[in-house]
Length: 373
Image (cartoon, rainbow, N blue to C red; front, side, top):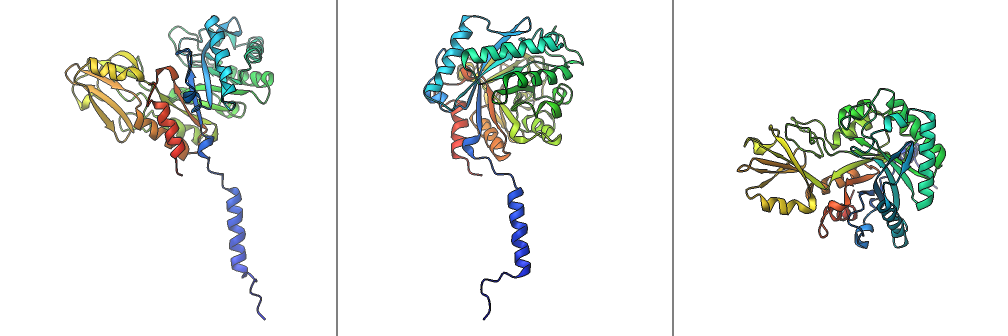
């Protein structure tokens, strides 16, 4: 009798190949694994449970150097950190991290981290604070190693190697379980010059790509400050930064993209191309929670959508004002992008700038929850 369970040789070979391919294919990130990371300055003083339940990580911003040591600036820092850690009672999976620096907050970083002693003292002081508050890790926001950042702050070529040595010192002191991350400028000069990516990334848990302020307070030409994609007139974007990291072999599950919970506004912008990519003078930043008030106080604004950049912008031809920001739709697109590419997550600056109801964090959370690969 014929063996009805015999598999033809060709079919057997095909099944073997399929099984090998399946085992070699990385698993798609589950939507509940996407990290949602908030930078938080401590304002407002308390957070609604609904808000914290939508977060996986909160990075308290900022602590600064005293000598070579990471230190609290005042009693408010201590109170805020103790409060954040207390949120774990109702959200046990929430991670709370310390953060060093920020724009203008790393004046002596280049000097402090230039010696083995300085790096060791910093690592030990970080561990002491983490132990004191039962925090989960440290985020380094040095703006910037190797290249010019805040005016007047030292930057030297040696910063690049010293930053590598710094993260290694932290890992040695804090151990394997502590979270170690850093904030990276999303612009090309930082990406290409500031960090030895191949040595740093195996040591840290992930990088927070600051894919915002890509046009900033020093820019005399308007543009999108936090676009998802590049355009013919603006190369720097979220996708541009991710593509760079991918091109040099950085694992995508160690990349977190950034969203902006604030707008940047320019004045004296001529009525050409709805103010986009035109000359202008930076006027101010506006928290997302204050955007409606700002628009209402300056009648004449019209909202526009750049379908290439996947970014909104506002222009007021009468007052010649231009505003660039993230809104609900651009946040949805960024969250989908992070999920589609199996990135580690999405972060934002900063939690206190969001609306209390129907804010941008809610857009992230809803998109994450409803995502279909």
